[in-house]
View 1 (spheres, rainbow, N blue to C red):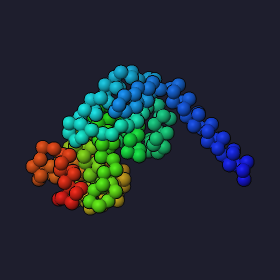
View 2: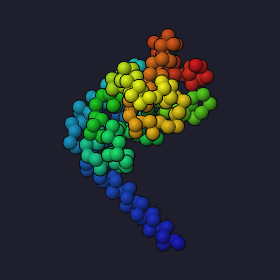
View 3: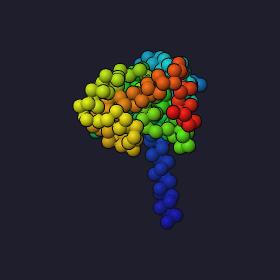
View 4: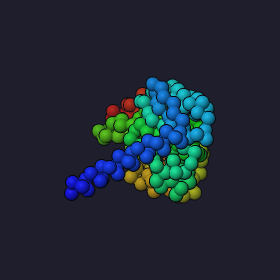
Length: 222
């Protein structure tokens, strides 16, 4: 048994060293007070840093500052699949946020809108909402789409998709547990609905700051 434990620890240490070497030989690294970014060598790190800085500034202006994050900008599929093993089955996937502070972006997501979307998730991660440990998926994604101003999920596109799929406007909000299933049918149905709800909340509140609207909602407001 002791030999097995020692072998298991040895394999674990070797694996960690392998990942460490892999990262530092295939990535350029940039650190500052807001984030650490690992950029695959095929990218120009200066351009990526500019995109991230712009995205963080957008989140700060529209919401609040995201906490310090670790960002991986992947050019190759093997890099991104470290963070999202199922990548390739969901063609719309461009990035993922893990544990509230680790952001991985694939080659289709290295742009300002996607980075802003994911960094908004970092900003709202672990935010308690209406007595629960985290906000519902539709609210988290709706805020991220709102802040990133992603036109793919516009009101017009959402309503057209809802009509096409014979879905009621409030279906996503009432069936938050079916988020992934709805997204597989059409991302515009889920993300578009989420943006629709958040826009409606902001409009009804008559507030300029989405941050205040979200805080009020999660503290028991409507």
